[in-house]
Amino acid sequence: MTDFSQFATTGVTLEWGLKESFRAYFERLSDHSYQFADGACRLNNGQFVYEIVPEASDRNKLVFSGTVQLEAHFGALSVKIAHPVIDQNASTGEIGLSAEVDEHNGEPVRMLIATLEQSLDGAESLVFRAQLADEGQYLFMGNYFSGDELDPVSVVRPDR
Image 1 (cartoon, rainbow, N blue to C red):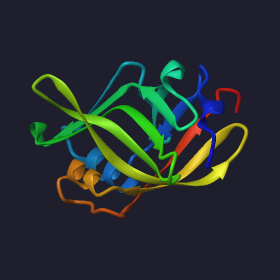
Image 2: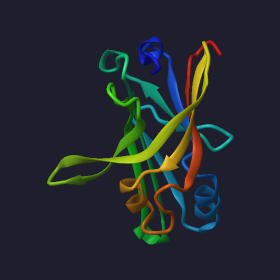
Image 3: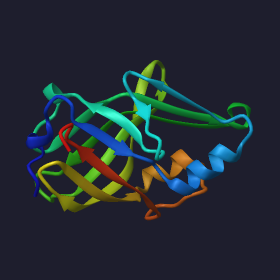
């Protein structure tokens, strides 16, 4: 198991493009729009960037701030990924990425979007292979399924 606490420092970011084929489809839609809040942004390579919340993170959990909202089809297509968290189960070592994806009665709804498998562990970054989680398939309204490959997830130090 990886000790995430070494990445729970100011300036660390989460970089994730979600799914390249989804972004390509989305960007072909004439009315597509990206909205960013709470410090999230998008890099030129399509990756979304979220900032670490060091005081909420620990050896088994990395908490990030920021909101990315994708909308198209006059609002019928709406994907929100806000305040993502990478969680490592202390007993099993399983790792997942969850995020707030909606609201219900004014309260955020958090969903496990991806299961993660660490593929690179270095001093400057953690890189994870990502697959769509069972629950996460609902975020894509049945167009992608549990186990489908997603873009890699990277946790990056600012001094890389």
